[in-house]
Image (cartoon, rainbow, N blue to C red; front, side):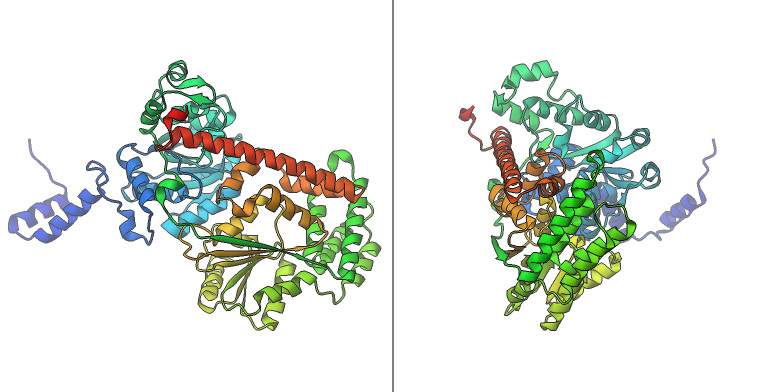
Length: 567
């Protein structure tokens, strides 16, 4: 039988026969192939040689364990704040470089979708598309979407038709119940590699742990009846903890904060109550009374609070911003009691009015040579702050959602080089790390605690080398002041580790911001409003206590140094 060589193969054979093959080049190629070979295991992380990423020792250990021992199917269960997201990203990057992964699906809570996209792009040069429609899951090779969006029809059917190389699920404790749509949806996805990220694999019941592990490696913990007999005294009390840890160690990586010995920077928080001037106070009270009348006139089954909440918050931020929004609402004629005449009267009240908070902000900046980030919610307020800051002699840099990616990079680079004040809307609280700055002023606070946490996380995170100073400005006797009371005194959010707030607020259910707005608008008197706020405060305190119970259970069950005798 005649052997026929491809023309390129013939050329190689001729080169070999004539001695024209460079031996050094041959061995360089061979070593490169071995380095990337999945057959020879993961001797080192190739991606760290080509990227500017520097892992902490616990992160590198976790990544290598998942790659070498767990073959890409694992629960990343480090305690909050230790960088599970970057661990998952490096595992993904390593598989991509070795051509072992092409199609990737990342499922997260809705609030974290853009953060995942931005962090993968900025830290690991991995481009992922945010899914906006079912067709996006087919069109893009790497997709990030909220779990709630992905599990709905028809996206669910599209996703489960595709063979995914890697699926990553953040906040994976949402898959704790095998009878839920969430668990069944993820279980039904065709996937080669699977990473589940959660700091609290167990929330209330040890069966939740069994359900997570079953997603990764069915049979690892045998049947539930066998698991229960071997490891459970009751649904919240484990037995044979050492044996359970050994079984979990094959599919779970966990590092506690105590084990890392990483020195987290101090977080110094100061809240400043600002007294409004007489005219500004009268304006605020008039706006609140107007909004309450509009609220009462709305049909009970069709109350749209968001525009009213927006105006309420703008009136405590910058009166001119509130009037501009009210004028737009009055022009549409959809709100009973909101007339152009009433708004025109309010417009007359704010002519030339400088908010008391703006003056206090300039006092906070005075004499400070360090760069500072000032967060506001509103573009009109942002522009007013920028004008005042520049008049006071500070370089002002505006960062907002209408900037393109290149423009955002240029603004941040100018802030890094020139210093001054970065005045940012919520766009700066998402995904972008600003550890080169350690001073942050919340000119106005979101009513959503997780968005406050995102802001703080831009500067107070792993990699920050200095104590972080945070100042919260709040106008006295406003709804904002009561929100700060809930956040600071009841939730204690400014002293919690990044990531803990998400777990606590999620347990409260949806609509934290809407509940505050409803309490303010539905109350006929200040006393009634205070009673509603106190009730929310008690609910938050109970949620904090419940979270601490969950945290202790996970530490006792999963941390290697836990005292087994305690069980």
